Image (tube, rainbow, N blue to C red; front, side):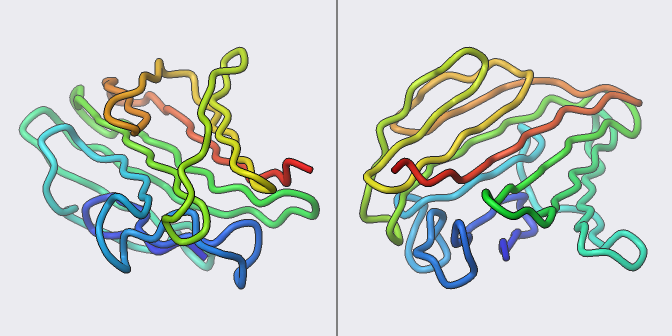
Length: 167
């Protein structure tokens, strides 16, 4: 279960299981404890939210001066590894977006070692590791991974965070 705020931020997520220690725990304190935000660069709260039909896919939409954008959040069932899938979709215009992820294992107490492996970002801390896959460029900024990108009408930009035991 991931708790997604109206600002596009996942502020609570336990991986790989519901009863595991949180890797995003900003809900308990501040962003130093970990979060994952994807939203228009101008920020703000979303315009609309809903679950897609009879599913657990959360759709969050923003109307901005540049256009309209939707983020779909899901956690598909899987046996060996847990995934969080976030897809940014342009509905109209061309919207500048900002993605920030600050992984902090063990309820914000452990800062992982982060490196790039090919087109993937890898974060490792003791027995935990997570991979972030996305086609947009990523960079480090103040112990946070950041991406600035734009999405136009009809375009989709995927982000997949996968937890893997590192043992």
